[in-house]
Image (cartoon, rainbow, N blue to C red; front, top):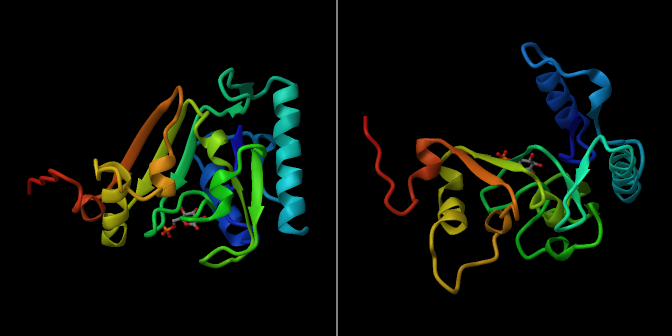
Length: 188
Ligand SMILES: O=C1O[C@H](COP(=O)(O)O)[C@@H](O)[C@H](O)[C@H]1O
């Protein structure tokens, strides 16, 4: 089962993900792929997407976290923006405090497109596995702030707030992105 909550209304993004997951050698059944409805408003698209997930929970296709009462996905795959954004959860945005909805929407994304839908933090942190992929030097500072022990003044970066309650968090980084991590050492 692949749930795709990326950017809305960027059909090309969803289509690219579709192609990736549909491509061999990943044998995904097409009916297990749930894309975003980009022919309605972002608010409606978020409601529709949450409805789909609730149906899948009701029919026990997706299990529920006993801790958070949120859907418990096997794996959530995230990218991270240079500002520490994950999913469409941006720094200092009120969406970071959304604890009631599973899927929500924003209309003022600091980077295009302005209208997006996103899983909320409680859903991300209920997953069994969360993988975050970050590459390139533009992500280095945010990665340092997200991963290293930066003390009590550490900013509430969305990427730092990804802390699965009862699951694993794995970072996939390249050398450039990791270059500002404390103790980073690279061999040739
Ligand atoms: O807005 C988004 O940004 C992140 C990071 O993108 P990148 O181009 O800086 O790597 C991306 O992972 C996410 O899918 C997208 O919604």
